[in-house]
Length: 266
Ligand code: NAP
Image (cartoon, rainbow, N blue to C red; front, side):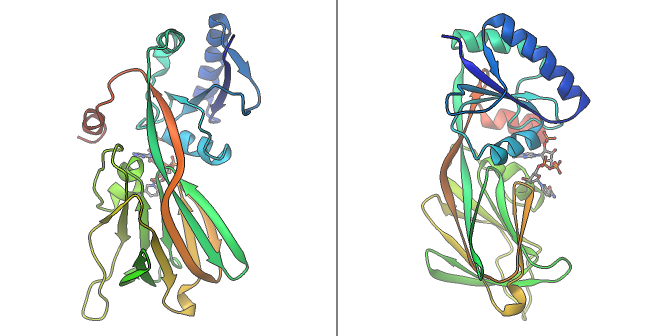
């Protein structure tokens, strides 16, 4: 039976042109393109950059369906297939010549005065205070108090997200096969008045990070998940853990993470 395919593309002219070309080639190869994503979708083709894949995951609520990323963006850390290799991609897919690479995601549960809110990120969840003011946050790991953080905020990154915002903040690059979360401080204050860890800390995948405002003035917090923003007025606590949701990318070639890291960053 013909496989059901859904195409998710960003709105650039280049992506629109490549999407049109892709549709024609898919039809000729016998794959059926559906206009709606559904439970029975067997393959998602994502046309854009890494940011487009992040948007796809947020818009479709982290589907388990395997994704092929056709890169029309800049970096292409997730998005691997260059547009000129679409024919080869379709051929290899139909032959079953591919592997699945699974990425962990991070989830945050925000307890605010008016309710509980949940967010998931493929790259990271960052918690920040008011712009231009330091925020003071009590940090616990598995209910054991660790520190009173003072600074701009915290970035909690997955291994896949370690090369995004986390890396710009001075965090480490992590092989996505590792099951952990990286907590990286954003402009931490470190003086005799305020003491915070100044480097990233790594948490096992089973641990829970709890963040609570030190005072009422710290309870207005912004949660940024993969670049999307949610603002909260009276936060009591934010709990962050690895999520059960996985992102499954189809890979046709070299799966060596450090080859890719080298080619993108060095
Ligand atoms: P954007 O501002 O349009 O682009 C951010 C850049 O980050 C793009 O070049 C994107 O690649 C790249 N990127 C996304 N995920 C990555 C990853 N896992 N590893 C390496 N690079 C990655 O925003 P966006 O495209 O919506 O992406 C949102 C992400 O931007 C956030 O999740 C966060 O990681 C990152 N960010 C970084 C900073 C910083 O470095 N100071 C600040 C805020 C957010 P493409 O060109 O292929 O799309």
